[in-house]
Image (cartoon, rainbow, N blue to C red; front, side, top):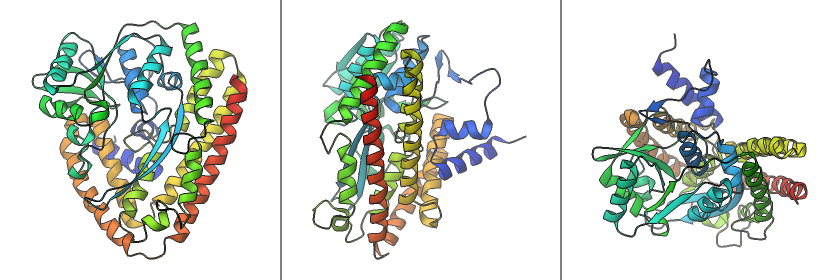
Length: 431
């Protein structure tokens, strides 16, 4: 019989090797559970897992209301996939980080929540209490009344990801606060076990980022029927096609084309040959590509596979078989993103392979054990940030980065062309 420790080791190894999410890697290692999907619980709250934080949070609340609305359908109602590229440079610690946006309106939490819930016919209340004490009291009142809340805290202050102080205020992703336990808030972050966050820390995390300070969404009871879901799917598909057909090179498909050029253009101030001329922060940047594009990261990956699942559902719901054919193409594009991530952070380079292993270990501890895996996640995080510092130093002295940047540029350009053609096809199918 496989012990729990052996099982965790096998799941982590698969996550590090393939870039898969915890749920997917666990399914491949353990196999399907007899009698249907296993749903662990904490009292009356059922953990439903999930891939992307925003869509998973809504799907979890709806599931706990007894509604059978899948995460792919929620994701599609919000407009499906998006595109965005930003290279951040931080002077205080010399780090460089690539931010990749893969969800429709990825930079606007409130707008995405509003249109997603509106299309699904889910009533909701949104609160943006300015004061920390008032926001804390509002959350406590909602939880004590049995109403779980979708909130958007800063990851560093949450604590359970064990991030360094340099990432204080860098933001986070939506989670579900589902009940209080003394002076702690219990959180569902797509895992299989409760995560307990001290109330004071949780309050600080919610208040940290000004653009969505203390944002809170409470979902009301809803019973979306087939007609509502069909309309939501069609609206989401049209939204996706229109959004990704726009000319913006920051928040639409041209962002990939711009990134491909910046990887090799020696003239632009934000071009990689100039930014990384000194080699500083290169390991961080490459890791952020891998973390951003692969489901093993904190944000759920490139989401093209989630969109493909949504297209399959929409094909049946709308009786448009061509959408299922397009789903196959987006699964291929998901593979292109995987190949890019592999090229950015290859596992056969020992230092980089170790970084992948430690990243997977933290994710597995959080997803599988919640707060019970705190010590294990903390140990892995300590090793991870030391390994990242060592890799940054090694790559800074490694010499010519031209071949690497050229190879990445070719892959990004191929992704841009594949997604451009697929979105054009989608637009033709839903107009």
